[in-house]
Image 1: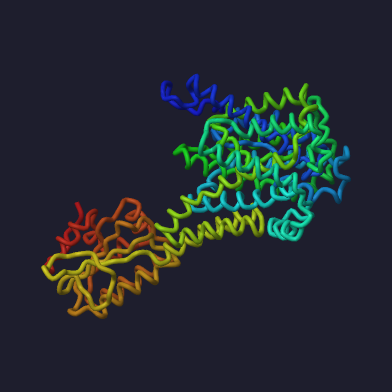
Image 2 (image 1 turned 180 degrees about the horizontal axis):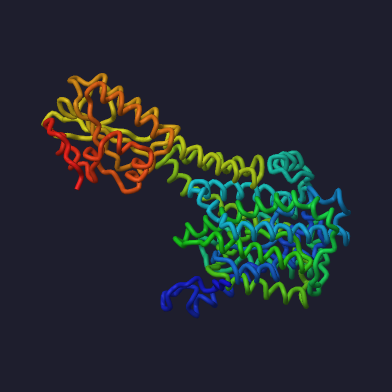
Length: 563
């Protein structure tokens, strides 16, 4: 069991582990509750579940992740993406909000918990390592755009039919003439107050004041009668505990739905926890997070809730509120418990547009323009990858966008390995040897070429290596006697590259050219021994440093064995 409540900071640093940190996180939990309680009610509607089950997702599941998870920041609760998966798949099996539907949703959560547990057992947390900082920045930007567009419907008072972001944007544009003016004015007032307050009074919990103030105003002035939609009645009471009543055949039919939720949770939670850990220069145990997510979904299944996920929106809300440990999440759960017992009455007066406006300001903050500018300035290729990730999230969805981003990241890595940096040593006008780009017709010294290959040798790039060697030897100004390879960047040789290497050594031997390897690591030497390259090249021509390799062949002296 892992309990990660204080973030592991040293006492006296002013972090979450100190008294002030606990108080700050407790306040952040209260602020987070004020912003998130109405939001999870909306997610319950998206999932086709009774509205009160949204509150259940931020009660026991929140506590379960706080106990078993690793991330200090990740908020595990209802999420629009997994809620949409449920509503897109289960209505064909039962009517939404019905007792049968609730049982089916509970079984999906239980199956999802099982898949996550298997992922923990097989340590699939490494999947998060394929999400680079570039991908994370683009991912959060895409989610911010997606959420921001979704919030415009309630902010304008316009009804939309689609859950697709681009279709939603079109429906909003098409319905601007039907926008509710009082709703729009209240939304603009809340957004302006929060965004301005971040600059003027950044420590004041303005979203909390907005929620409390508008609930009071709505109750006193009957805003619903003026066309401003409110949340409406929310039943109270604690969730009942029990396993979903589902048949074996129905369970099998639910496996694809659970698999979709599993993929969404793994990718989205890993991206979100990784992004915020990167922001605060912290480490995250992805496998512990997977265990925490499994526990959270298991308790969601038995407490009448639905699938929970590491939500980027709610995590960003927690971050904005000042949460720096899972203490904030526990306080959030405590507030939810209080609401379920005695405070569901006032909640019904909260205007929907106020909730949407608060979430909209969070979505804006998720678009990290300074980071995007830095990426564009330092690495234009990675900037386009970030933009492609954001565009994919907006256009085709979070799950597909993340999977595409992983594929693009791997493709970019393979492309770099396929075309690595290569160079050779060549004399400058003063006679010094300096690294220069590989250019056939250039030599390091009469009869000598020193060449560096900047990646491991494998099936996709070995022809580039052998092609460079042959071209340099063929076009050298004087006949080449020694060809020295700086192998400092080569740590691995696969079967295909080894075969190609032995053929190259035979060709060079027929031309009277000897190959010598310098800066050979123990890992590379092991591969060379296994593939027969050491025997083909000769142990006397393999050296641990480049200096020894060059010294051994300089001036045509025979190579001596490495010490």
